[in-house]
Length: 392
Image 1 (cartoon, one colour):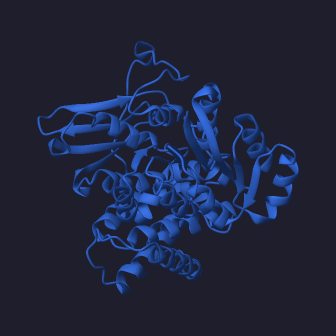
Image 2 (tube, rainbow, N blue to C red):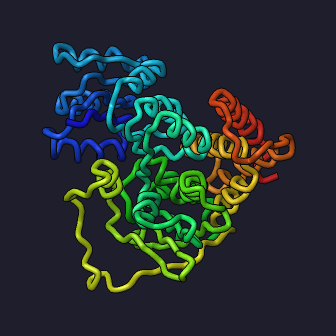
């Protein structure tokens, strides 16, 4: 049996992972499940999967978790240190699906087990890509991408020489507001930005899809994970969300990964790698689909995309600053304190301040984890200070 843990078990990626684990319980020995405030769901899954330990990231939620799991024999714990200790428990396979920069440290600790880290936490590569990849090499661990786009690129590259890659095309649905007139975007509400036409995801990632910050993060991830030059990474808007990525080779050929908008495909590929296994996902009827649509993204509508290009060019702590400012701006939008378009303005102001003050060293240098966290906190402070300057 494979020893597995799921970090971020109560989120959308975590629940899709647990769905697959529950379909073949005889194959997995579940070590740790971690979640947030939804302790009822966390406890149910821990009981169903006979987990060794259930951890909530919020210490105030510990009494409720302890009460629900009393008498089950399942250990309970809470807080950041408990997450790290859970990550230290030996596993063969670990899902990293904690949302936000909070997922970086547990993922780094899990790499020490030398197994597979299934990486759904975008922030890890965006904020500390060189560090994460260096740690994987140090401990002989394997990182497998779980974003549908990066899983698609990974699969297209099986058996191929990375030196023969001419370009990588990451597709984007365009999100909930892709057909809105530009002049209307400023009025978009949280509910409107949260209604994705194709994917069933959490609120934060769905809003990031509408603003294209999600895609901007994925562009940076592509560079960090595959070591591909930024000038070889392209983005296409693909409303149907069926072609997840394409890899173009020096001979002019394109290798595309096509599948339904169901995260269990990418999760299942990582869970069963290096083999393939039957998955409970829709089989596409291409004749019924009829046609696939693509268009170039508008940088005016989605300013997050050119920002990602500049982040990759600048390197250093730019990724950590970019992500922290984005997270802070998203919090403000969800709270109703700024508008939809204000998010990109706020991130831009933080990055411009960072670039004006910083003298980056080697752009692909490994930045220590403490420095990543310092950049994260500084970016959030600068974002707070920049809010009154919006639209000025």
